[in-house]
Length: 250
Image 1 (cartoon, rainbow, N blue to C red):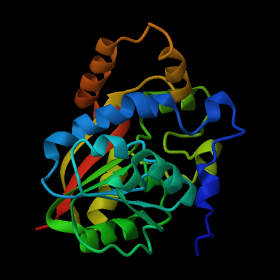
Image 2: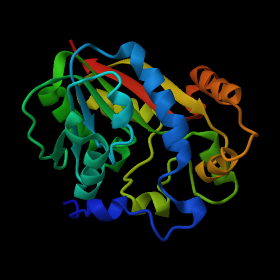
Image 3: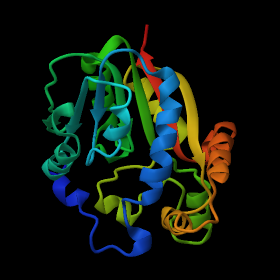
Image 4: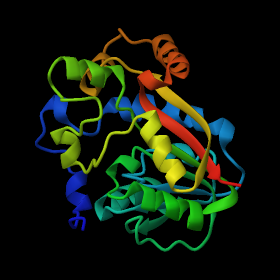
């Protein structure tokens, strides 16, 4: 039986060393815009369900595409901060995915860097497939990539034991696993979903804390970021994050 979790505590990023933080500018300023860019060609007309909205930072991007957005978030503190940002533009549900009761089905569902936090990911993916995803809807699933070069380099440096290891800092913030493309697709298929598209988002050879330092300089140009994004589509297994687009199995 899973231990009762304190989602507000998992949200807390204080007291960590600079290179052991959980939330980085790289994620918000670089990865998030490229995630949206990867999604937008697959968006369906209609409504949007965001599972795991954190503090509403990614929700901001979704508001450019959808008027009817529902966010499910387990942390009350995170929801309070999201409401400060977006007010009544978004419907919020403060509950865990395993128990949340939602009033309708959704044409688009996104989970960005969330599935790796879930105790029983296949169970939650089954709920999405069987209860929340509209018949013609799409699920956008993004997780950190175990095989990102930055992680592989960390293994060679002796900082982590293997590519898919969960580091102490990740565990503190609720990570339960670290996915690769094959294990992510395994769980999606086990839940009854049909994977219609798979890719990587942003070729990444440096750790997040290194990226945050570089982003404060003029070393990294927009052209370089664009190059990393495009290279990631050629080598999805070497990206910061991996992405699946899923539909109901016909």
